Image (cartoon, rainbow, N blue to C red; front, side):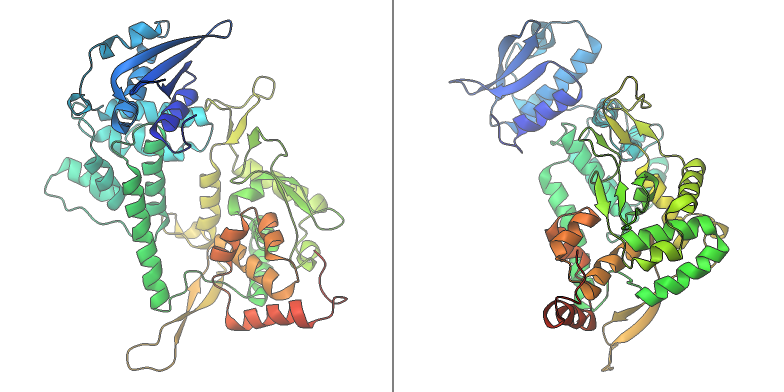
Length: 461
């Protein structure tokens, strides 16, 4: 069996996603790759492909792409016919690289076969950037690097006018993270030659350098509001817009990701517990699948009417106003009578709706809530000053989730691994990301709560 991250393993994942009966394996007592074809009756046909060496990752990726491309053109063709072009060995450097129209079609097909969010396939569809590149020129790593490092507007302007300057992408913004995911998608779809792992690592390093610079300057990466500030703000939002007051109360009380509000399966029970998603391995409508969440503080469940008839009415209204789009593994609308696998295809868009309600950068200002949530951010002392600077900034929905993690650490005796489980991520992510913003006062309160307060006063998880 090939290692999990080898070229053969990645190629087989692509073939599996396209539902082709072929698999690539290292040949027995041979340096060439073999193609196995699964036939009816549990029979297998094997063909060694001379010229494609087991250690030549580029050649393996090109072979995988050729199988996918030829199988679409000749669905009923036998393996020998599909590999006819490979009969004579050809050095991998002389093989023609695929052009962007072929790559775009293959990537969209691959992502649709995964049954996950199709937003990442946007640059490969319609008027996406890669669809606008020259159709008869082989794709290169430089094309992918240029896409990742510059804004979409300046890239399209450059295509129309070669004199237009390219504007660098801000590496700390969400858009840069999405571009990194597009590069990863290209590699997972079998095009590691133009989207190598080294490129992804370089892009990740740019984010890390930004993070290190912020930390060195004393900048807080998150605007964490206090529990009192959240409660006062929720009271005002409940009066302004009861539906969005209920939505943000759910996010704050249970530490939810914004899109998870749409996928609440069970509203608060007698103990305040809620269920998110569906408890089935083949159904994953949220980022990390099914889980149960705990309220903190529990008094907010009754204060904001999160359960009961009001909760059911608000959840139905939310789903009616912004509908989740469920698809099967082929990206087609989900049919419970026909399909086993179900995914939600527009979680990113649902989460963006929540973001625009709090702090809009590309939506109409009148779409925002009138009452804003703010938090104090402490920065490094200005030049010639001894005291740190504090400034008041507006929050985004994810800040409510981070505030939940810090509140759990500060006011309860829950083990942080248990908190990570109810929030839907690993203990390592919880410690490294969610507890990195905890202040000295909050750390002291957590120590007093966990070590000095009697067990009879501690909160039981």
